[in-house]
Image (cartoon, rainbow, N blue to C red; front, side):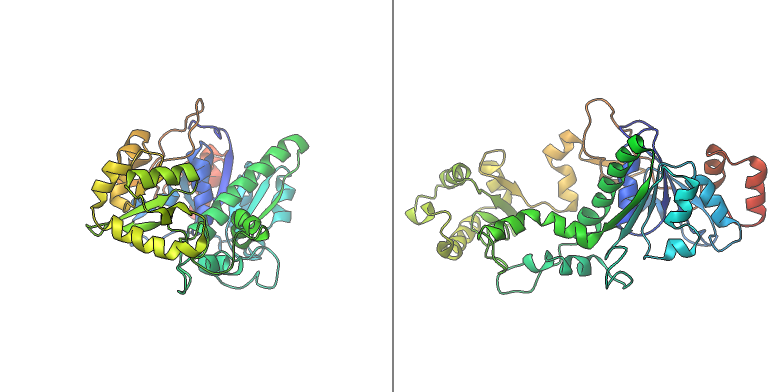
Length: 378
């Protein structure tokens, strides 16, 4: 493997959503990540090829209920730089793999924990999903149209932005500190905390009196006529984001908008009627016609592309923003590096496909591996 994290050894306790996303990002950057997961039944259908979040790492299937399984995992953890787990608080402890046990075996270990509510607090042990975590952090309330209910922003905000990326940032921060102090530590990454952090700019705007609690009435929430999406004559959509005065002026010029009513850009009382007029304007041509006029200019314009169209856009093609791995279209690793360029990710592996190879590579003797097989631990 190549990439800026080449040489880093990570143990991932398989889970859902944000923790695998974090592990994928680390593997994308060259870290050796081994994914420890439950054995699957022999008759189970293998759909690993399309499990994009599992790409770039090998799979070790261990029956954690079997006697001796915990000791095996601890042997691997003893040789790792980072451990990632995404269970509810207390689950790892019940498996005998809590922070105290793991750090006793490996004092330099960075122990990354990913949860929705965090390791402590009144809700810490409650079930939940992305929508719940972003709700109590204030973010969900802010997303949506004026007078309508909040809009679910897929699971980008909690699971991935405020979750997996926050965990990735946290474990690499802790790893940097461990390399100078010689001591590992626990990273408590909560999606509620991460979502709140993503809202820092809005809290600043609110403190300055430039943001209010009404959906669809603010600069960046679709309230402004110069920051919104519009339907075109062919039923497709475009996105306008001309916030700065010079970009807004260029938008008006290119669209041949000369009415003085548009010159008071920041007058909120005029936003609604001006939006109606812009809606009428953009309905006069197709999306492609607007692209021909506005794309690539400083008018802050882009077509709203679907999943298939995005991969075919010339900008994304030239930058290789999307790749195919084993025939499956998916986003390429990001960001880019000038020297330590990561290799193309490998396809996700079936559960347990690499169990023996991983154990051997991580220093477990062949006799021990055979014994683990005989005991059906692996």
